[in-house]
Length: 488
Image (tube, rainbow, N blue to C red; front, side, top):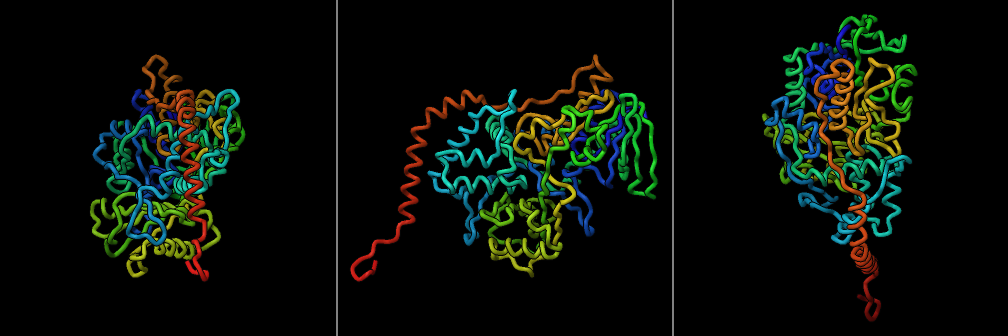
């Protein structure tokens, strides 16, 4: 195969194919499953189109939103409101914050403190989010618990497995690029991935699904053959010679499985073997009625044992007049020992404990996706030093994926799109060296020195707020004064 073969039809591979094709280079896109999109896609389950999970487009997803604009599908996204937080026993009263004002102020000071940290550099300094939070003299236990629970709900990782440098990067991105969060107006297949595939094919990209990569052959310092299986047909295996370039847009675990000839060509060599991911579960519940009192925006179940967040997309997706609860399960791994029916029962009963108007009779259909075989990548402490560059030591091999090297905090959908663009630029340098480079939007950061100055200025204020918070907790914990006869 001459030209470029992109293996992996997730968002990274689709973006790489899109950007490479703009240079007039022949591109073939191979995907093992029956649909494109990967974790940003949908698939048919029990006769229904089911998203891999809930996806959001924050304003700082500069490359992703630029891609949406290029595809001409900006109207397929809608703006969402703020996060609604639900405490146990408080339905239908939702809060914007769950900790007292003093704890909130101390957390904001903590954000400034985090932005003041010098992570990375020659020493590749990093620490876990847990270590950062628990080493801060000013943070209360309530504030720490709230942050840790919120993070596991969005990343499937506990705070001791999360990079503080990465968390700093995402906070800085939100600070530098504020704006409304957007979501698709319906399932991702119809409103995002489907139109993307149509644009790819219209641009001349050859899309082939049901083509599973089994292995590669490296010889003479180049990748020169792909072994593929027709996963969607008769299962026949074929080895194809490669005359051109290859972009492997695969999950890091699949990349590791291709062997040392591939992982040794990465930069840094074999670093991808040290990356880890965790499953982020999805639970979609179709109801027979519209639940009263439930907002149309994101809801976080505070202190939820399985870190559940949800959105009733039935209120905003076209064609729905009843509630459709799309739930993200941050601690889905805690249910791995249960059967699917048992796991669903645990999760639904947990939802009912927060939303008492929900009953078993309301439920028409349930789709549970634990995603054990499709885990979500969230950078761990020190993982940035192991994330591979898109260019490799093999001149005709390039890689893409949300796990690839990028600015701290950039992973997920934006990480996938950015890596696809970076892989396309790597190909462009090899095949079209005089052409204009692929443009990759730079996500702004926050100067640590500026944050340190602000931290110093606010330290006396933080100390005072912490004293007030301690006094409030002491008063709340003290028993009531007893009067004569032992009566209050």
